[in-house]
Image 1: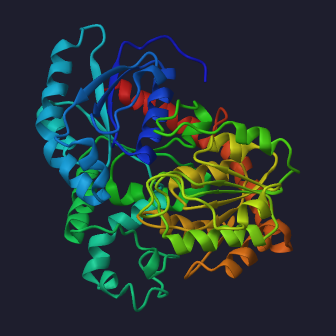
Image 2: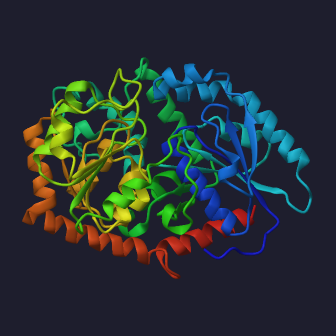
Image 3: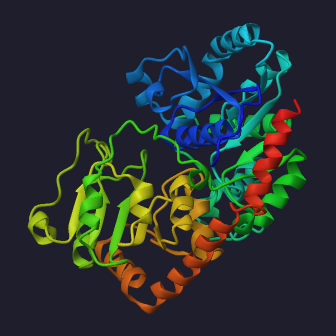
Length: 452
């Protein structure tokens, strides 16, 4: 994107300090910076970003009241709750000082925060500063989260174990097992968090979503109807202005050299993101399923991916020699480059939204293995609405894994899915061109911010 002259307006952004939330927030920051706005980042000490990766931004750290070791050990819901309590005073003090220091020729136009940090709405209101919200999930899964109070009232959440395959008529095409959930030591806090998040989004000046109309037109229309605030679907973010990664792991770029030696669309890329974990038995089944498929694969085995293992987990005995010529194991990978590579023919994913959208944008069909939160809903849309992937159901078992890989990578069913994926890749490219849906929505967002 061509950088425009500075508008003399500054935007303050406050990301949730988890990788899957930080990356899209920094991508949004780069997009708005390219539109001519100055950028300031307020961030917690936990998972603090590296300012050297984001030249031209100003950074303002605040206390989160947590030791790094303590924060890393918390389940996500407990962490979110603590951040919404302990960050209130430090955030308010920091933002107040920034407003006081703002030069007349560069006033602060607005605040953009992660939706989960719902306390920021009250702070913004008290300082008479417009707040916009970034939802790092898609519109469809956001509707499922917004419906949680209703679904709980109707008893769906209490029957997940016994009736997991039952359709939820209020949220087609979702089944009970697809309703967003996160394991927590205090499930009640999860429902409180989502209720407050939706309440404060409705009180905001607008919602920014990393998606595009051609993919989620119906869901976006329903969000507009239910929330009655401006909705800006300006994705895919990473195709507008690729942002420097906020990853705490350095990507193994030599895997691209290995991909260069593989046949077109022959490699299955396997990555379950930065947070999902499997047990040792599941890890073994995945490993043997991959090996027995006889398909070349690039597998991200990050430290801590196997529960109870802090470092990189070793492969099962006898497997390394068996796969040595057709596999590459990496602790982390440059995912956008991998998905865009001509050798990549499939993506076995946890269906976090960033990964799902990146796969759609490159026309790479998916094998879906969701773990928690919005991932189950994302997977359902991938397989049952957009028809760009297959889902692994039930217990992980090497025979079923091998069968699913073959279905996607080498059988007619996979060819049909690949054709559908190519259709959405084209739509993702067109929406960003002048006159496209995301192009127009971004122009509207820039005008909206400039009007404050």
